[in-house]
Every structure is written in structure tokens, then in C-alpha cells.
Amino acid sequence: DFVEFNKFFNRIIDRFEMSKSQNVKFIRYIPEVSYFVDIDTDKLTQVIDNIISNALKYSPDGGNIRFGFTVQDNMLKVMVSDDGMGIPKENVSRVFDRFYRVDRARSREMGGTGLGLAIAKEMIEAHGGKIWAESEEGVGTTIFFTLPYELDEAGDWE
Ligand code: ATP
Ligand code: MG
Image (cartoon, rainbow, N blue to C red; front, side, top):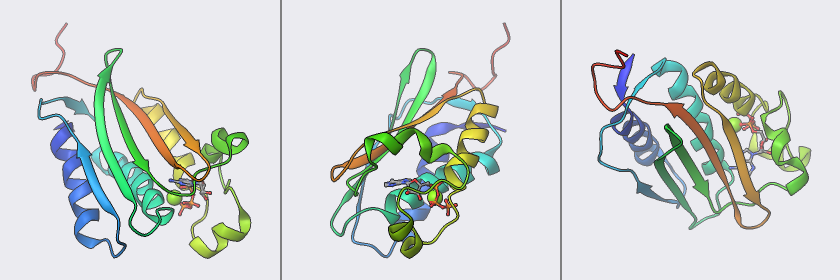
């Protein structure tokens, strides 16, 4: 499907913002320029749902989750950033492995299978993008992913 990314992204964030039970503030840095992406909307929704539910799961009471995107190297670069417990440096790249969960004890309490980010990586790469995490323990985590985009609805006719 060919969709306007800002609307698509805002709609997903709205859904979480309306249903969340935690005391966590959502802050959006979403440009009003129209960027169109040619995506499987169900799959991308699943990817973003997992990233946001992780951010909520690991957010402290009173924390913020920041959402944004920019254009970099001809790609949309999307970020979701939280003030949560973070991920130890040596484990950051492994969170995209199947069934990998940072800390068995804390993960058991949180529920989940450890598949969310592995699926996200597969889906983002299938769309021609990349996904990675930057994190600092006790400070927070930012998940980034990129997607190819078009500036006009007609698509790229070159
Ligand atoms: P599932 O998504 O299958 O329900 P999950 O959330 O545990 O389970 P992933 O989404 O793949 O699995 O995340 C893998 C692990 O990475 C998590 O178990 C957690 O340890 C760590 N992690 C992911 N996102 C964050 C985050 N925002 N803050 C801190 N740790 C995170
Ligand atoms: Mg998850």
C-alpha cells in the first residue's frame, strides 16, 4: 500500500496513547511534510506496535516516550525513544536475535517471547530498511529504523 507515513505513524501512536494505563507522556516530533512509503501496512503496524509496547513495558512511572522521524541519506529515519532501564552495552545488538531477552528474571515478570524485535528486523529489511538500537543503562533506549520514501503520491516513475 502507498501511504502517507506521518498519518500512518500518528494513527498508531494515537491508538497507544488512548489505551495506555501507565503514567507515561508521549511526545511527538513528527514533521507535517508528506512522505509517502510503499509498505505492507499490516506488517509495519506490527513492527511499530512491538517497538512502542516495548518502550511502554520498560518505561518508569512519569517517563516520556518520544516519537519522531527525519530524512537522512534518502531514507526516512524513524525513532522511538524511552526513559526506561536501558539495555547493557554488550547486549544491544542481540535484542534483534530470535528469543533473545536481556535479563531472564526481569523479562519473566514482563511477559513476552523475545520474538518481537527479530520479526521487526526481518520485516524492515524486507522493505529495504535497517533497524538498530542505541541504549544506555539507567538512561533509556532508542530504536531507529529506516524506510525508502517518495515525495509524491504518484510514486517514482524514473
Ligand atoms: P515479545 O515482543 O515477543 O512479546 P519481548 O518484548 O521480550 O517479547 P523483543 O521485543 O524482541 O521481545 O525484545 C527483546 C528484548 O530486548 C526484551 O526482552 C528486552 O530485554 C529488550 N528490550 C527491547 N526493547 C527494550 C526497551 N525499550 N527498553 C529496554 N529493554 C528493551
Ligand atoms: Mg516486544
